[in-house]
Length: 406
Ligand SMILES: Cc1cc2nc3c(=O)[nH]c(=O)nc-3n(C[C@H](O)[C@H](O)[C@H](O)COP(=O)(O)OP(=O)(O)OC[C@H]3O[C@@H](n4cnc5c(N)ncnc54)[C@H](O)[C@@H]3O)c2cc1C
Image (cartoon, rainbow, N blue to C red; front, side, top):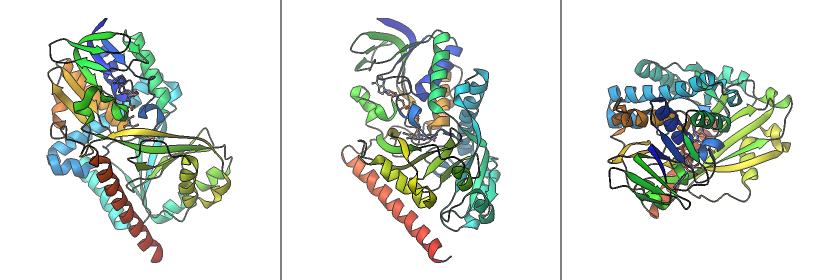
């Protein structure tokens, strides 16, 4: 039997960030991870670190009003700074941060893109540089893109190395990490909670659930409140100078579709290309070909590029597309469902839970409006997949209209 002030379930970015913050506030911490540290989405993702949430600010504004939406946006920005500061303060060199994120649209709407940049500046005090089509054309050799914006404050990095570096620091601060230790049963009613794994037990006053899209059935109440959604990534062979002729920016790139392409140059001249989302959680057989088709659609010159690595990953999505950061019952906390935007939101989620456990703040209450909602059971994935197909149809229609008018 191991004892600690706090037991964290899940060793992804949410669990690690929460543990690191708690240790710095003087709490003792145990992390239980069913596989390996950052084995889930946190070690498999695209590595884009930018402010905001998976649901987008409109969802937040609608539910909370502008004033609270601003505070929530500022928290998402604090999440970006947490990662940036940890990389420099802890000397996490393997994280290789690189500045900039460039968002593009695949339909012609200069006014709409300008309006979006203006709105982010006037409502949220956040600067995005509008890029008209001629500037986009200097950055990319593709016919797919029209206008865009550059976020100079965002960055991209090696997420697995970041998590492994953070885990090392957790251990050196006295935190205990148990890998291959799935929490399979929990006694959560008393003032001391007991978490069971196949090998042992952990006793703690507070429990933080950070299981993400890989959560097993042990924590049903939270698990039934989100859907695991898959997305995919491939990495090409080394492409030499031709990748720099096609993409003349060091920023990470994404488009604004429901399931966007997101990609960046890694290892000097490889392309890391991510995209697609589906409620199907098993990996498709021809994953490499699927994503290569998307890549060649944007850059036909890459038709002969070899794909050297391919993988899928699961994200946890609530119906409202916002994270669950809050108290499930006395001493039982949820810090999960960060969707496709977790590199900043999981860290700030971890910090907010660490603050309330340490009686330092109740900032987590800003997320109260985004509480646990049933995921629709067996119908949930079907409904989500239908919404996705509907939105893809809208994306397709917008693009076709732009192409036929140019
Ligand atoms: C392919 C891909 C690309 C993405 N790209 C980006 C991006 O570029 N930028 C961005 O901001 N976000 C991105 N995301 C989303 C981001 O990766 C996630 O939101 C974030 O990593 C979630 O972190 P987490 O700690 O909540 O979950 P995870 O990293 O999935 O960690 C959860 C961990 O909990 C463990 N666990 C679950 N149940 C138990 C249990 N019962 N006992 C013990 N351990 C348990 C799991 O094994 C897992 O390791 C992407 C996601 C994927 C999959």
